[in-house]
Length: 417
Image (cartoon, rainbow, N blue to C red; front, side, top):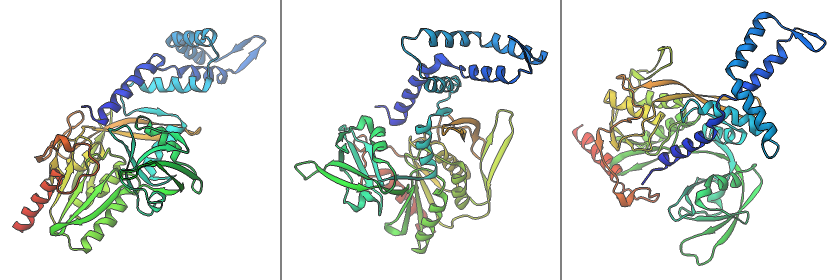
């Protein structure tokens, strides 16, 4: 069965195929701008331009004659008027699609806004983590602490079947999430199916400004600390340090850092966390198209107790940077399954009209110079989850064989000390 990441990749590929036919068409806009701005003198129905500008325009016309012709044909022959805004967005999307890189993308206003929510970590909503369940329902994973969802009594396993009396299903999770989000102070009505209740029931929630909590922690048996990092946003490193301090005040003897299904995020946040774990060491280095390298290094700080990292095929990007640094330096132990394999670094830019884009600008390498793109990182100890437990959102600690292996490894290390 394909995992969510593979499905997403196929969806991206299909989208690229559709828009690929208009690759580089945005140049037309550049050509139009150039023509209207290089003119130096108008004489009747003629214009006089500098020789260099004229030769430049001739070159553009020669290079993009096909595109100019196609655009003109579409605008005059398509069976209904074209939407100029969509037309321009499509041209820009086509330019990015021509790179054949799923991580370099142009985003419209709504897409870019949603993307930045995950980067900055705040949004207006109800503070409920949801997933697509195999039964076709949008299912609550958990309500965040002190969130509107928790305040009205939402529970893990609740099925959301309507938003403001409009039916929603798992295959349209993104649309449902967009409906649930909104300006803080406004209200939204959800219809819920809950195990043990015969009939669906409604809940009215007042939206609040929600801070995505990317870090959670607790203490397991035998004084072992556990920190789960779901992604790396602008506040993840600070949250990690706060949770770590709380655990250390409880005199933990070992630490488990759970990076499973962590898709990555901001490189600088990952580096700050690695700095707490590695001692004086190279964390990662990036290399651009010219071969220039940028090294990220940690200082002399290092935790004084053993730790393990839990990873799987959903651990990607920044998660792999942290995992690769830990494995190469032998600072901790990696447990789980081979990671996703994303060794590329993107820059994110916003545009004046509210749109934006991501562009791959470099590759990254682990401290030993390993390039993991397309290969991933194999853990020190490979532990597969049983087939019947994969994709479960309600695993107990006892059922989680990867977590149990982490506890076992730490117990052995603690005992030796």
